[in-house]
Length: 59
Image: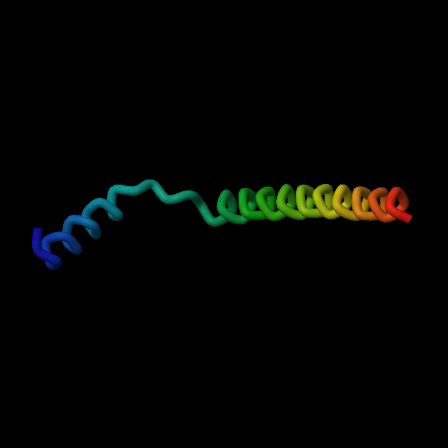
């Protein structure tokens, strides 16, 4: 398949995609960001807890 026919086929396929609405995209993006912040804070909290616990045990 040559590059031109590949690009034409790709563009054709992209025209058939049902894209989400702007509102849906924003809502789902905020959900992903919220979960990411929560998981990051949870893992960071565990790291801090275990670091302090290990420091307490070693001293």
